[in-house]
Image 1 (cartoon, rainbow, N blue to C red):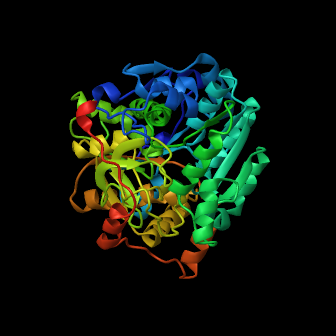
Image 2 (cartoon, rainbow, N blue to C red; image 1 turned 60 degrees about the vertical axis):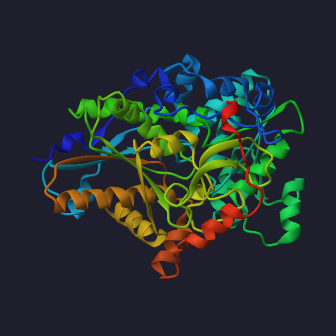
Length: 467
């Protein structure tokens, strides 16, 4: 018998986690350092401090298993949008023909934040630390605009200027995101732009360049080095961003325990750079590494048009297209890779977070990939049954959760499936319109294109014996 009282599991403000979970000490193989692109050696603290707020740099390399969340930061979370609810997807289960409690689908709803996604979890935190450092401006890149919206909101809270370089194809596809950022007093540029030398170089070669996250990162990094009162802010990939997002997974564990579930079977999240997926799964992955949840299956979902984990190589690569930022070891399609213009702009980054790359290589987690048409179809099904239209990025996790539930149903298995509903799609209606009219195009990245991207341009050769 389904318990309908458990369909929406809430927490009180005093139940917001007091620490972030740092998985670095528990990784099955050592975390590699950030490497200076100038000499191929581990980046000195001065380089990182010139780019990021000081406390974020300290958290990037910390080996403390838990890192306290400042009390005044938790108070900001409590009066704005945290803790977020965990929902039982009863409508979706019914539509899939699932009866009873043998198969349960839960989603952690991060769409209720001021900007509609999980991104403020780290955006507010980075702006908080920047304000303490006396920083006057934070500059960043954004794909679909969720991260840019999050940082714009965070900067506005603390009276810091925010400048956003938005991938041109998304800048044109998603005008609502641009308006939202500007409503929080951000300055927004389509990337590549004529505001940086990096952007000018790409526009000279192609005035209609669609842009990429790698190019937008190059522009943001260049901009951030103009003054000592400016810092760069990153919404994914690096360790401290994933750390800040673990508030999501910790809340989820508390909420599941409230309905008697201490051992979920499947954890799912979409992944582009890795932030929302890591935020949900890291607390569970640490339990898996410690033998508490040895059988939990953790799945990251990518678009077939940009499958950095599923089809990329694990190697050293530049984090940005102009090769100005730190070099990291990660799953990558090559820093010169320009993805197809899919609507899941937040999943169009050429690389994957080093933490996720290590967990995948050690088979702690797995990965899957889907076409955007089947993803958007799943998003509509979710909207029809649960009442929230997912962002195209989020719909990747929805699609995988549906597949896993149907697989369990077919095999007569008992499964508890949890996925991160990382954001709503109210600014992404064009993707759904194109699907409805039959004009949404799928992009499958051929192996030869991946090899071309990996072999084109300068790839760093790093001597790991020096670490």
